[in-house]
Length: 198
Image (cartoon, rainbow, N blue to C red; front, side, top):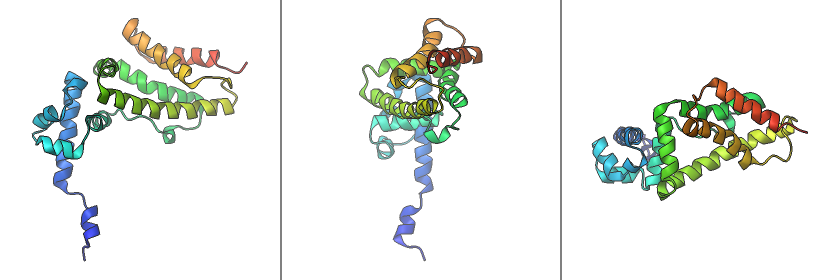
């Protein structure tokens, strides 16, 4: 016998289809036109659903942006994704950004999102949420490096992130260097030698 609770727990396939259509349309708009295109009205039109449907799934524009970034594979890493081995974990975390910067479409999106976050509250909210999650994973990684005697004990998490990510962003957007394994390995080697215990 089906109880009301069982019915509530079942997900209506129509709801899932409309949610998938919304996120797919939003992802296409984001990659083609950038974050300014992500409005409930534009996404509704592109997905072929009502604006009310988009609001029902994603009440805030920042909710829609979060879901869209996840759709295009831009989830922030959790500490569960770390192996516990400092070197490979550092390369894994930094490699996520390097991979995005090596892809012209994603690099353009990163540049646009960074610029829009200065003036767009929803984009800034998404940036801050993702930065907080990444900072947590990176902080756990650095602490493991300290515990294993691979990193100096007085390292500052934010400055360490700035050194690593900033080096990649500078290489891509200022020096127009190829973001490849050689660059990534060099940045990591420099970071490890600079921040080794004294």
